[in-house]
Amino acid sequence: MTFHEAGLEILERAGRPLSSQEITTRAIQEGLLSHVGQIPEQTMRERLAALARRSRNRRVVVVGPDQFALTDWGLAEDPAALEKLDAPEILDESPPRRGRERHPATVPPRGGRTEAKESFGRHRRKRLPPLTEVAFEILGESHRPLTPEEILTRARERELVSEELPVETLSNAIAEENRRRAEAGRRPAFSFTEGGSIEVVEGPAEGAPEERRAGAPRWQQQAAESRRNAAKLLRRRVAELDFGGLERMAGMLLERSGYRDVRPMRRPAAPEGALLIARRKLGVCDYRFAVRIAPSGAEVTREDVQQLRRDMVAQGAHAGLVIGPAEAGREAKAEAQQIGLPLVTLMCADALAEELVLRQIGAQIVEISQVDEGFWKALRRSPPLRAPPAEPEAVPVRPAETAAAEPVLPSAAAPGTAPALEGTDSSTVETAAAEEVPIPESGEAE
Image (cartoon, rainbow, N blue to C red; front, side, top):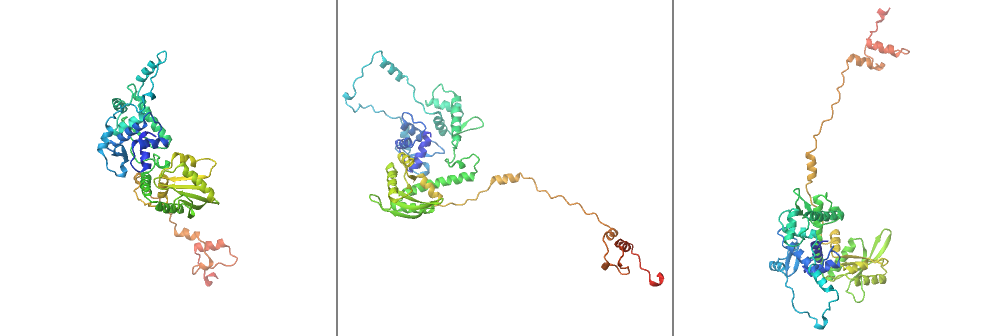
């Protein structure tokens, strides 16, 4: 991460204002910074101050002397403290605290190597910040997109880049940063306009990989952003709970997560209810869990994980779980991930808040209806419906042809016609019926 990204991440995790020294220390301990430099505290202070001076889309404000906070917290800004950050630092020219005997005079060796070293120190080049940091700072202070030439000119005026740096190097560094973020499934930091200018990509924080896709619908991005905001608020609410409220909340979380038979256990030298025992069925096996409730304000340490493993042995538990509103230290995470030891899961800080949102503890999931613009856009381009082709009309049949085609049964003979006799051919009967031959009377037949 860059300095401004690490600073925002540390402030979100802490949930309270921090100084640049505290932010830098935590970022280094958690391994968030991709590069540190010689004076990381000064670099972090400069980057956060640049974010606080932005006229739009500000995410950081100065609330006191060297105290930075997020704008989402709604804290009052301190303009005097921000101006003091812009003032140059006064170097301490007081004599060293050590006595003269601790600083013996150096004897120059033969060959004049000391003079060569002094000459090298005078001509040593100043360590410059990364190009992506410089571009982000300059674009953040600007009210419009800038071309690479404009960014490079402003950077040279502030002595942030060397005078010999070509424009192609800056453009390649920005493109490489976007490519690196894309491979990691993250949002790009910069975007190129049609005219060749560069601007900083503004938008919601990064979420899950499926939510960070370029083709993700807007409602999905809004839902992810609402979950993140709810998790931030819940983290602050959890930090304000006393131990009793924290224990009750942990019990509700365990029950809604599939654990059963949750009950507190007593052990010496521990607060009442600091250890919970629960059971959970995973697959076809039923496992016993030992759950430790970490108090608010205390960081989870390596000793907490080791003590939980000892409690697991005493209680006959298969796995352990730590629930706490504070952050888990780097050593605690390393201890929990030890191979060959009983499994311990750390559900602390942001992970705890996200789990509360998922289980709807202290938060509610609200259904939102939104117009699907893609559906209506596709519907406007749809062709009109067409009627099915008409069936061909039937050819009319004359009555004589119909009578000739239908056989005449004996029961349906017309009056005055001869009925069919036994032994008479059917064709003769049909012919007689078709010609309507009258039957002669008895006198005429004789």
